[in-house]
Image (cartoon, rainbow, N blue to C red; front, side, top):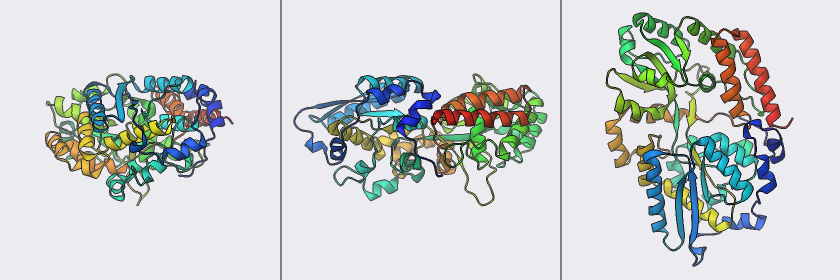
Length: 453
């Protein structure tokens, strides 16, 4: 996909979804050209005799956060006398984003930060991240050809995009993907051995399953905007047109999806329930639920009353096109600071992707591992023995997952505009035709505002 490169100025002028980032352009002090070029020439051995104390900020909680603290201690022990790294949870996605913005404005950015895909776009446009290409290629502490080949291509190149002048602005740490989960018992009672693989057949299967199970809903959705854009992607249509200046919501697939969603909603077979959709699925009250692949851990542990399964979402891509679904999950990025801290941050990113470390992280988070070696590790094989659905999704779903086209307007378009319009259509406040027109107009306006046009 070809996209125009965002300038720092135009990004910051209009991005309503990233209010407050204008502070970054005023307050952050980028590394000097000399510092930037020397960063890739530095090495851990050149850090000197003074201990370098650095931080890693993330938004992971629970047992996985404790594992990251353990990782930080192990990493620091390996680099005793040179680097001491502290892993710090900064809350949820929004809270971490806010703290990064505040730190960029006031000083004190961490050596490494976790970030979600739209965060990387924001931070890159505001000039607070270091491109990783020189670190990856460095002869002393870069990646070997074998290490690069070990990383799944869709994750290694996840943030090497035209919008960033084809520079690599983030590094993988595992991922998840838009996945279909279904209640096999409900499908079996309606005479189906498996779920359908085509969106063309999906509505009729939902109707048949609901007719055979009158106490169950066909499909519950948590997040109308998220699921609509994910569904559009599996039709082979990205939400953003090439060039990044206009939405794709005038594509006929937009109206088609809105039409059959509205038909199922009118029949009582489709509903948006942000708070309770997953719990209803786990209670056996709906045939289908679609969300992150990471849910397999909870489902494997807690669903015992019925047979469940998961796989690729239905497809409507053009004939001959590859299967496609959406990638979720955070990545790691390197804030601008000084050469020594940046090298320390890069070494931490590399360390996390070592096969044994990456396998432990994937087990704790139920993210897909991003390396082939981790997938085949003993630790993950033992985990997959207890959760075979997760292992199968590694083969069937993970290779087809890609991010949505990045844009400074994506957060607003997905989380607010699309969610509101889809809900209005399902609640009969708008016809599908009116919804498609409104979605196109409002999304395009948000894109232009975000680009400062």
